Image 1: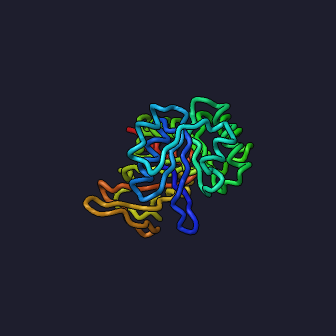
Image 2: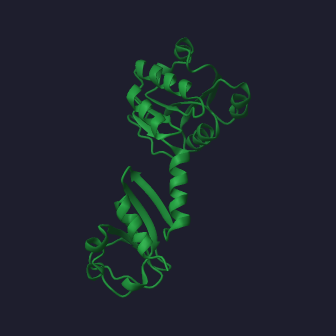
Image 3: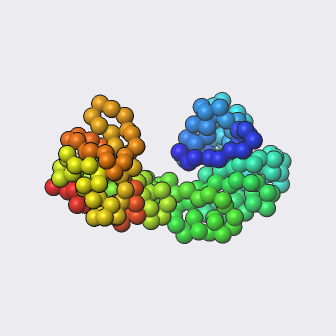
Length: 226
């Protein structure tokens, strides 16, 4: 789920689009104590979330008058979760920008779509399908147990400590010099993750979290393949 900033303890949010992404986001935020106004043009979708969300409304988000009537301009935080209809997604985002909504998150279905959303004023763009597909591709094709691209070109990965590094301190492995990545955390069997230092010694079964440029993280993962 996106990490949404909030200021002045304002836990009200407008979510436009109650499809798979918008609906699951809305439910999770309600679970976390947020006041959620869910909006969609589909009566069926709105009805399905009517009891779970704080407020729901059937309306066309590309209609400026409709947005004014629901008080969209009074929200400091909004999510445009419209994915399949690009024109609606872009126009809705543009209208929220014009209304002065301070923090707008928008779902994109492609990088091109995302660039357009940024150009019209979206403050944060997420590509859930693309990001998940990319993440799973790294998991099934390499040695990573988990993988997150923190931003384009910079990633974090979790993997088992390589056999060749067992019994050595991180300083001795020269992992940074060899691969251009940094081990930021280590988890021994039966223990919790802890911060790693150059004096941390790796043991059999340890899990390590590495961070660095995406290409370097991928190169490190490939080097550990049997």
